Image (tube, helix red, strand yellow):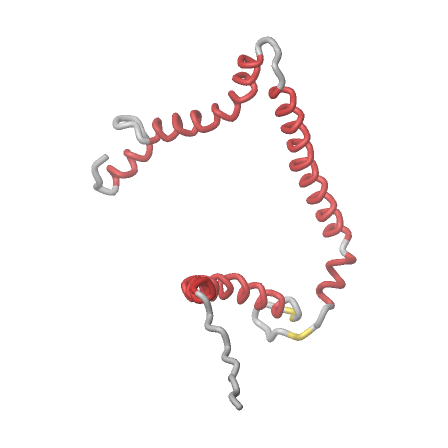
Length: 154
C-alpha cells in the first residue's frame, strides 16, 4: 500500500512579488504613520489634561471636550465652517457641471465663450509670473536688491 503525502503548494511568482512590494513600501508606511499618528495621539493625550504655564498639568479627562461642546462661540465657529465649506464646494461644483454641460453642446460662438469662460483660470498664473518677474528685475527688483545687500550677485 502506498501513501501520498499532500504538500503545500508553493507560493507563486505573483504572491512572492506582492510580498516584495510590501517590503519596499514598509519603511515609507512606518515613517508616515510615525509622522501622522504620533502627533495625533500625543495631541489627544494632551487634551485630557489642564495645562497651565508654570504649573503641573492636571488630568481632567473629557472635561475639556465637554466645555468645548457647550461653548457657544465654538458651536458658532463650527456652523460657520460648515456653511462656508458648503458654499465653497457645492456651488462651484454645480456651476462647473452646468458650464461643462452647456459648453459641450454645439452652438454659435461656442469657442469664443469657452475662451472667455477660461480666461480667469489663465489670468492667475500669468499675473503671478508677472509679479515674480518684477520682483527679480535686474535693476529695480526688490529680491535682487536684497540679494545685493547680502553680497550675492543677481
